[in-house]
Amino acid sequence: MSHEQDVAILSALEGKNAQAKAFRALSRRYWGEGALSSRDKHIVAVGVAQVTRCEYCIEHHARIARQLGATRDQLLAAAYITAALETLLGDTIGIDADSTLRPQRSALSAMPIEQDRNAFVNQVFQEGTLPLPLRYVIAASAALAKEHEGQRQAFHHAALAAGVPPAALEEGYAIGVILKAGAVYAHTLGIARAFA
Image (cartoon, rainbow, N blue to C red; front, top):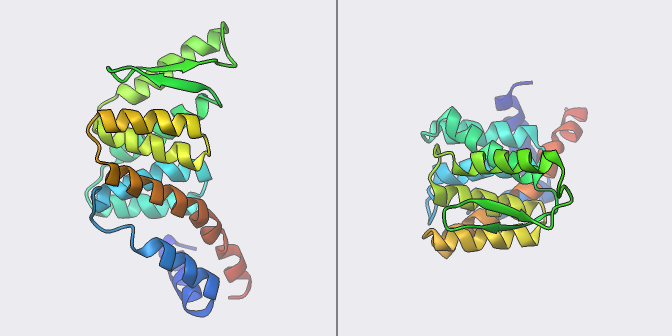
């Protein structure tokens, strides 16, 4: 089925099912312009959807972000921020004033992969396709979705130091929460199709 058909199935489900309607009510108010632009919210969603592994969510939010002016490279940059976070495992991190990430107490200490991982993480975070404040919002929101509070706090504080308004972080966190539920919402397509 096409993405458009999937959207139609989920929309129809919202008219017939109280839980699907409740998800839409949770989600609806967070996608408009706010401290983050709608475009940037969908870029954040692409990054967070990498955590939830929801292919439908990735495609859906990438399509909307593209319609709102995002480029392929911006969406790939958001995805790779999450890839970098994945390599941090459960490590505590510090972030220097020059935006260099320093994993601390690493399970990989003194292994060759640790140095290579650190180089990868810092290449991703210092690459300038997306503005640094948005990179921090994506990282904080993805860390929330990963349920890694220490990393979330590190990126939260770095975002504030980079001039991100607290309201922008709150909007990013709302997207993180919505995408956690949204992955399940998207996977109800299989149930809906079984009864189509």
